[in-house]
Each structure stands twice: as C-alpha cells, then as structure tokens.
Image (cartoon, rainbow over all chains, first blue to last red):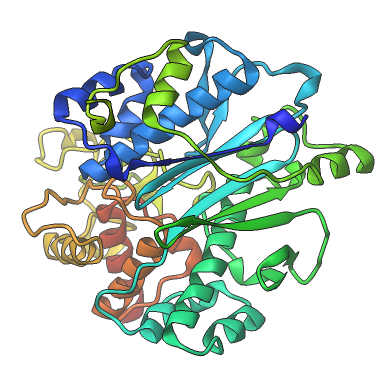
Length: 288
Length: 137
C-alpha cells in the first residue's frame, strides 16, 4: 500500500518554452484535457496547468501501471480531477490524488486509501496593504484560537507566516474533501505543536481521523498535505471513490502509512515516464 | 417566469447546489436575445417585477477594474463579464480579497455562500446589483 503514497513537485521557474514548444508539449495531452490549460489567460498559469496535467498522467501511469492512452481523468462539478478508470484492485482500495500549483511550483500527492488534499502557498508580502489590513480580509475563516495565534505572533513577518500556514492547511482540507468552497472554515480548527502533529477539530470535535503535514519547498513556498476519511468527501466527490466505508483497523492502516517527503521531478522526466523513453524537451535550457 | 439575461454561464466552477430564489440567472441555459425579434411569446415585464436581470454595464466595468487591480493584470487585459475568476489566475486568497473589494466599493455585504458561487465577473456584477436593490427596498 505504501507505493500509493506519492508526493512529487516540479519547479517550473527554469522552464521557458517558446509558444511552439509549449504547443508540442500540450499536444501530448488528450484533446479534451487541453482546454483546462488553454482556458487560462496568463502564460504563467497555462504553464502551471500544463505541468499539473503531466503530473497527473505520469503519476497514474507510474504507480498504477496503466498505459498512458488508457488513462481517463475526469473532473467533478467542483473541478476536482479524479481517476475515471476502474481501479487498481486490492492493493489500493481507494487510490486518489490532488494537485496544486502556485508560484514556481506545481505538485501532486496521492494516497491509496485515505483522501488526500494538497495546497501550495508562497510567502507573498501584500503589495498594497499592511499585513494586518491584509489578514483582516480573511478573519471569518479562522477560529478565535487560530486568529489569536496569528495576531499574537509578534513581528509582521511572524504574523504573515502563521497566516499562510493556517490558510494552506485549510485549503488542503477543503481540497481533500472535494469541495469548491472555503465555507465554514472557522469551524475547522487546526491544532499543532510547533507545526508538527497537526490535527483538526471540526465543529469542536477532534475525531482523530485526519492528519496534516506542512513542508517547506524552498524559495518561500510551503506545501500542506491533508489525509482524511473518505466519508468526509462531498457528495459529488464521494461518488468517484472506490469506497468510503472502512472498518477501524483498515482505516487506521491507511491513516498511519508513512508520509513521504516531496520528490523533485523535472518536466523532462515526466514526459519520459509517459513515453517510456528518453525525450528531449523543447524549451528546457538544461538540454542544450 | 423566464428570466431574461444577456449571458450564458458555464457551470464548470459552481458548487452543485446553488443558493435558491435569486440565482435564476445562473441556470445553465441558452441566452435569450433581447433585440425583440424572438419576443412573440413573452410579455414584457414591468421593471419592478424583474427577479434577476443582467447588471448595468457600469457595474460590470467597475468589477473588471477591481479584478484587474487585485490580480495585477495590465489595464489593457481582456477582462469582460464572461471572464471567469479562476481562468484569470485568481486563487482562493484573491477571490476573498476581490469580494472584500467589491463590498467596500459598493457598500454591500456578501454572504459567504453567495460569495463562493460567483464564478464570472458577470455573476459578481449581478449579485452586487441584487444586493444594492435589496438594500434600497
């Protein structure tokens, strides 16, 4: 089952493809997936979206061994991608994944049984407001305990850091359950010991069914991972899962699988995974 | 009663169950031409009975301005009523800030669930005018 736990990240800051090169890479994706890339107005967002797609196909191919052209990735109404193929058999009772992209990084995380959510944030200083003005916009998304922790963090730097960490975790939770909404997040309260042993109280209840981790990716970026019970999934996402009910023993096995570190992948590698052979990537300067 | 709106809206980023009543304009539907040519079977409704109409162009323009500012898009970017926030590169933080900016600009208060059901600039403009009207009523 451990093999189902994957964490991959790509640093796209060095990838600077010409429009032509970008198109060649885009054309590797199935036709119906390309609009998820081209719908973005900004090139930077398109790059991130394209790499996100590559990660999804490469991960499914590598972990489940499904040939690239047989992989079906669909989306829920809320936009969450999931594997449409009839699944992996008993090794992975509930294989699911989540992607995130922000700034220089695009990443993917998968789990064999528990739901997984992933979010990347970067430490961005608000350009036109003070830190306090900025965070005030979001105060209704935090419990009073969390809010106190944020505003009492000392320096502006400290405050902003705490804010982004909490936000990142909340987003990972929202994404794990497949919700499109950051709704009622003041009732999703995070508890931690110096940002380890992170757990959550939902509506005041600590169910011990969720675990969270925060990673520093570098260059002021963090990634959060949420791992939780499939029955917490929203209705539309739950329908896509193999199973949402597990006995306590099975579930704990999934919940307590080792969490792995993020592995750095290059765009070059992703494409070669999809094609099973070495492939020179247009636009990647390291090849020249 | 049919609602007459000028835009057709994609369901792609909507939550499955939308807030009821005033959101008729968000049903995935074909847009009704307002030019008058297809009006043989519809009676023109008096203004004060409209449930939900497309927002005034000035409101849409103002929303576009706020969005461009928040997302640091150049002034000449093609942002229109049909632009989807997600496609413009808005992440969850941006979306909250945009809604806050709209609340401030128009003097309204947006409920969390309505805020989350806004997918395009037009949605935002429609919601704003709806709230202004309710406030004035």
